[in-house]
Length: 146
Ligand SMILES: [Fe+2]
Image (tube, rainbow, N blue to C red; front, side, top):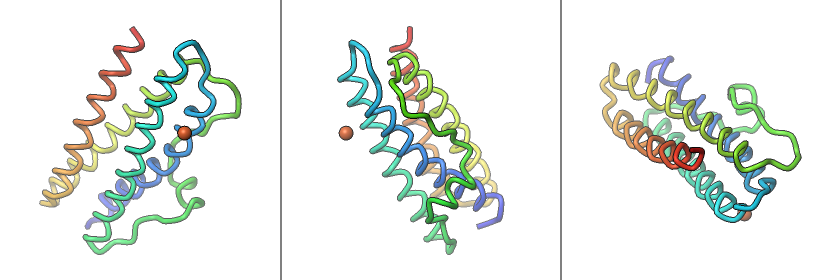
């Protein structure tokens, strides 16, 4: 695996790890009349991040690399901004989720393109599936925000 692909995949692993915590924060602290569906929806999303986190790291192992595997390294590499402890209104939570999913979509697309140049079609297929999933979640969120 070339250095560019390794750097991007490690960033993806780190972002997914930090987002797992960030989405738990919102899952616990969201407030409002429609609390329950949003609370449940956020759980669905962090479960998905957690699965992707392991999937991407294992793909790196298959290619002979060491994926980042410490919280300290995740915070160093990830560009995700964590949230304070307070109540979060539903519209605010959905806007944050939308922003994070757009960033993940972009990163997965960048990995897809770098892997494609390197002939790593398994990673290409994996990232295309991720982008497809993000498109669906973004459609849900954008519809909820209308
Ligand atoms: Fe929970």
